[in-house]
Image (cartoon, rainbow, N blue to C red; front, side, top):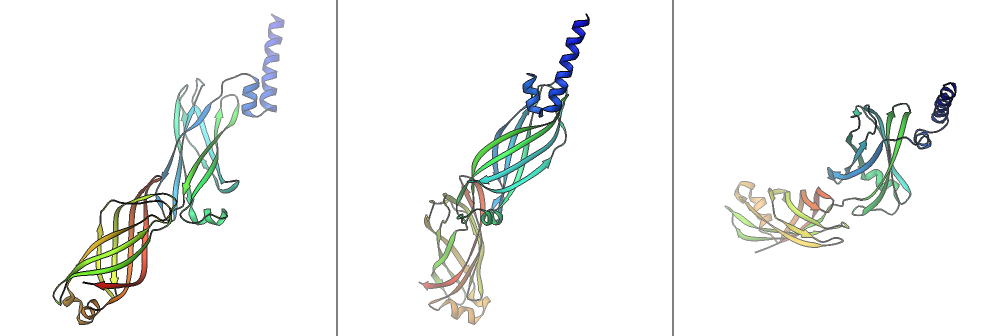
Length: 286
């Protein structure tokens, strides 16, 4: 009986020494005990625009214990080709059910201004590889603080706005009472990935006169790295309401223009809204 008590006490002392002298995971391994497991089960790109995007990691955590497992913290560090560009922490609350699992979402916001200032040789329109090192921290029973390391690789787009110009305005009818025609826009995709236009919202000014403020929904695909295409948009206005000076401008050979708006596109990385803005000179034809 005495020997059994001594052996039990020795095991307890050994466990205590291991837990004190080793890190959480090392102690669990040394004692051959179960430990929580975590894995990245999904990565999502959300809210992509010309300024930033949200990179969200879905992490599944399994609790092998017979009691709930408290969550404490998530930390992350992102790098591209060895150059770090984002890091931070996200405090956690709640628990993982006993002998159950829970999926957590870690959203991280990547601003392209910061990304381009850190990564050498990267320009708008590029696709950037990244390596993510994540740490999920919990408060394990009898162990205390325990960090579960995770790794994930992927790619991020750095969107560039389309290159758009007003090639020409073709008048089908042009009188003091009514003017109508078609505006041809030439579009070039400056991204290293294909885009497909779903909708273009635009405002067009010729000279100092706003002649159109509308939208067009038309699927139009543009290949990566310079894929080009043309969009024709109808315009209709009343020169009489705009004044004699505007009518004279419209009946001339051409005018300066200002085009501004947004283009909604589909991409391999998800939907994006890209700005459209251009000033220049265009010609009129009949």
